[in-house]
Image 1 (cartoon, rainbow over the protein chains, first blue to last red):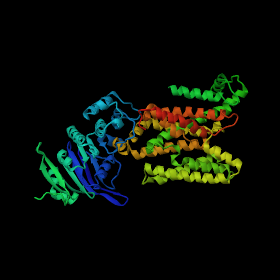
Image 2 (cartoon, one colour):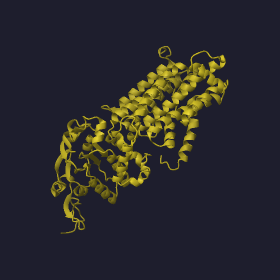
Image 3 (cartoon, one colour):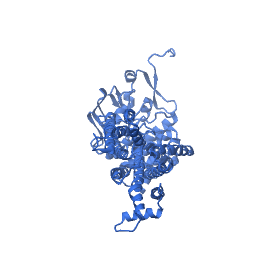
Image 4 (cartoon, each protein chain N blue to C red):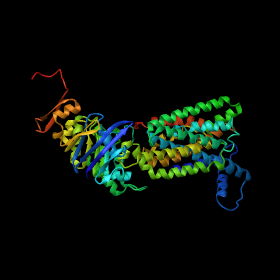
Length: 262
Length: 330
């Protein structure tokens, strides 16, 4: 299912956070939302979560206007891995993943055999099945993100929304999570801080700056040295990883005194 | 199941024990006689003690304990703060003002309302004030809710203190008793409002227990799971306010139950609200019935305000429970 925003504007307390934002994330692809702090990435995602209602414009999952379908239906259309990894909760991993079935369960309906099978499969796909009986708080940051990813998978939604999923993870856990997300093959929209991750793992990126879309295309086309200078104020360049042959981004501050003479 | 038996047992024992002890057999006989049609032979003295004095009192203690515990569960889930209790919304502050006024200066002016009516009115006004201050464009922000509630509660207690200073000693004792909470004066007519409120709220909560679990995972998580977070929050606010206001207006500001019972229950059965809600209901009822029993038997025939005992007995028990849960993080 495609994910689209059309002319979305959001103003909070007189400050314009998003200004006429439109983008389309293609079916089955990983689309990155990138931009500096305060560029509106999270706010744009929160419109899709039904937490912030745009004053103008619409957000759609496939044919469905997210704000015009019932809340429960929205929970069947898109799953969310957000930044709130609540530290003080006592739930076991399996209980948390089972919450992914909430949008599919009717009032007073109990967890069915089918629900349990879906939860099992979600745990396996997120490679966290070994921890199903553990309490969430006892897991590492990377393991917690995989639990929240498993919960999202248990929702069986065609679209996955991620808000900086690699935040606070060590580099090994970051790459492992991103590889996993790619393998899932779902339509994915992820706000990403790390531009090199966006370069390596996204099929397309949407570059936001001051609440507007600056560019939207494949990462190599969008992340030019000129744009990195204009939007992020850094000197960026593309290089090739000597072991993998893949393109990567490297950065330098505008004027660095530690530079070698060339 | 075990707890349901405990509630019935605690209630029966609490009705039997008192300044005039009634044999358990007679308690059952009198209750049976009142609940079934036809005229059975029974002792008139026991009948009066059991049915007119102790039964409504014990039942009110049970309903109040259950209701305050459920209100505590709702508010702790709503604001995700372990210190949340039923009086978070400033309800007791507003109710105290109403009750204190009715018990001292202006009994004539609000005579039509009675102490309960005045307290209920005070509670409703303070909830309206707190929720009004905490909302922004129809959305309730938990952080603002806590701050607005605390501010209104302080305001309420300041005004109540002032009224107490101005009251004569007889009135002062009445106000103090009310503020600390008591079910001593319970009659059958006090029961319907809190009982109906409790039944309505339970029905809604049992339907929505799963959503409470999701809400405790955070706003974004809950919204992502297809839950209308704002509507759920408003529902929880309504439930907690309704329960607390109806209970406070007939039983005064019984403290600590609504804070302690939900935590104790979570330590015992885990965080799942589908278990926390029914267990809190029953444990809250048992706890307050037994505390009330102690408050009227320890210093017979004098009565102590129940609110003193909820803390005196509850705090050590809770601290012991907290320490004995070695694996728990909280």
